[in-house]
Amino acid sequence: MNLPKNSNLWIGIFLVSAMFLFMLVSFFYLPYDMNEMKMDDRLAGPSREHLLGTDNFGRDILSRVMEGSQTAFTVGFFSVAIGITGGLIIGATAGYIGKWVDEILMRLMDALLAFPGIIIALVLVSIFKPNLTQTIIAIGIFFIPGFARIIRSGFLAYKKADFVIAARHLGAGHLRIIVYHILPNMMSPVIVAASLNFSAAILIEAALSYLGLGVQPPDPSWGRMLNESQSYIHKAPWYALAPGIFITLTVLGFNLLGDGIRDLMARKDYIDAI
Image (cartoon, rainbow, N blue to C red; front, side, top):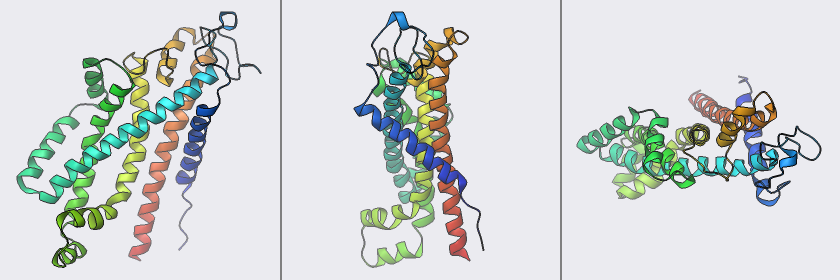
């Protein structure tokens, strides 16, 4: 049986790889100092000297977009890491122990899920001084309930599976059962969720920076660049297009990658079933 090609996966891999390479290059090379101001060149259009033009202070937009990619990937990686770590602790505890522990932990997760993620992030960032670290922590806390539910579901499904019962009869302890028998069998949905949450983290960070509650100037952020460019949208459209396009491509890439991995796992399960 010929299964259709997984175009989402390949397009996602291409976009994510391109954006990741773009970010890596920014560590070693920037066309200009990202904060270098040249008032004589302010709002200059794309040219050989400035491929994406300049902003209202004469700063090179390409250099700032490249530096902003570091912020986007840093927020995405560490916020997802916080979400997975917290979700693993809570989800594994709730799913493996069950009973009243499960009930209490899941009601707490429901309480967090009742609030939109951007609202939780806004509250947490507003309480403390807005900076990159606080933004990462706020977004990471928002991701914990989703990962906790996914991991809890896996533990509920596998803790009574035959191979787990066999391992328990052979003398395997609880930690060994969790680490070597249950977790490896539920990594697929966690990877899919991580990819989708990575794109969500980039969007939330951009929104917070746009509102002035994320990365603070003079450090560049795609969201802050959009905020700064809105007054010049008619006079210098390239100013807003550059960060907007990079946000779109990065988020689209991770979303397609997540969908592609999910489709790939579904097809694998289908093939195994037949």
